[in-house]
Image (cartoon, rainbow, N blue to C red; front, top):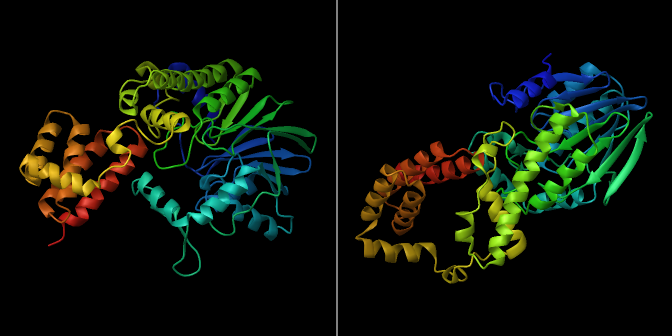
Length: 430
């Protein structure tokens, strides 16, 4: 059994990321006599009380059974409660496995406690099932294509119908006691509008959900609904004010020690607040989105910290989300308010440039110069102008694969890999 607190202390204190902080082992580690975590996607944390287990998050549909098995090996106590830190599929999708385990043991199904917006989210997932399947396949670039679940023949479900719905909800805060242990739930918008973090005042423990993921905060995600970086930072400040001695995230390693936790949460809050403040400052000055996203940055030294690496989301995407939150969807360029279709504009520009081949050659020159942003613009124009040209799309696939390899964040890699796959399919048509 790994000493997870020692691992995280080593990474944070030494500033050396020689151990992966985000692991999916489905193995359980004890953090205290009555507290254990199963590292998965997402983690599930189990608190042993005099009335049974309180579990924070259920992991995803494909990991839920393994997570429950690990918890049951640790304790056969009844599953008293299941707390959703938020309603993302990797946090609630495994809940049916918790219910099935309780039924096999002849025990009551755990009651589910969550913020009131979780139910609204699950309804939206039903409404946009196919959309969510598409964007998650693209976001994870084919790495996690098993995010989809087949139920009943060929029906594909983003979230299984057997996912447990909340039994008890709250609006801003809720305190309850299980087996003599007090648990305070606090709502705060951050990655989602239905997020909570839990505080155990007698133990000085925090269950942070996705407020901490051991990567740059997922406050930008280009394919998902609105994120709330300012309120995310405020929640981190509130956590620090409690002086927690243990912080357990839903992704990444748990962190021990009040001072160490304060540094990590403070650095995360500083990064988010700097993006919000600078973006709003430039918006107030009348800057366009183009100017803002190419100006507002996070100090590179902050991004080198092992818990702020832009390996999932990245600051540029967060700036887009700040703009959307405070300024709407229009980017400030008049022509893009009611734009011409991409294919029509591309055809005209291709004609002016001397044909799609000329655009491709210029794109390849931009790649050689290291300007991958420009290269992708040009090769997209070529592809839109010549949608069936196998040579053009072979070049587009190669350029986007080069772009994918050059990007740090999983989100960018996934989208660029999807673009490469689109053109690979065309280029292989004989």
